[in-house]
Image 1 (tube, rainbow, N blue to C red):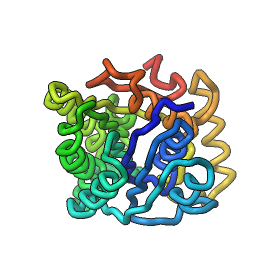
Image 2 (image 1 turned 60 degrees about the horizontal axis):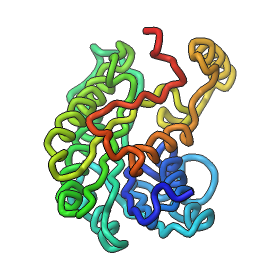
Image 3 (image 1 turned 30 degrees about the horizontal axis):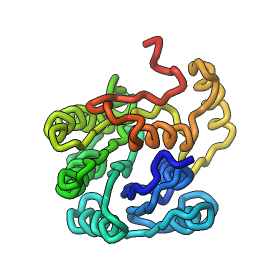
Image 4 (image 1 turned 180 degrees about the horizontal axis):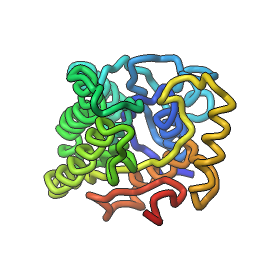
Length: 259
């Protein structure tokens, strides 16, 4: 399939998890090039680095750029790598961190780290990519990976919810700002997706029990997979979504549909 034929994308945090799934999904849909921008080259799970995997699985040109999204110079290097591959068409701000926390124990350092990675990184990633996208004859697409916590909040991880809530309204604001330049800006809000964002599983029995409880609350009866988010991102990056901007696409198996 060639929904993304000729398009070049930068995907932050693409060495593992959702970002890795999006990179592979874009390649499967004929993307010209994918830039994997991450602080680490090796995936958290098994298998080769994402850029190598993409090259093995497809004809898509793939490259890795070491990128700390809190560093503007790193973000610019990632976008410039896309420019060298024919020009950036899609920016996916996916890099993020998550952990459960007790509100009264959150330090200024904890707060700053979460906001810097989850919100500041997307803000300046969009700014740097947007400088090029507004010059494109056909515009482009910015996709921010938010969370259902960015729509509803969650008392078990208030800092994460604050960062993703900010990302949500930033998405709407940027869609308004860049629409006249033909740049579409949308957010994806994943629910429970099986990744290693929270770290290694140390208690498999407890994890199995938690999984059973969770899937009973999800109408589709399962955890989401990175590929599920990749499908949504592919749609938003493609011309099928040419009249879609300033929107939130929830990918959670129906978990929040009854809230």
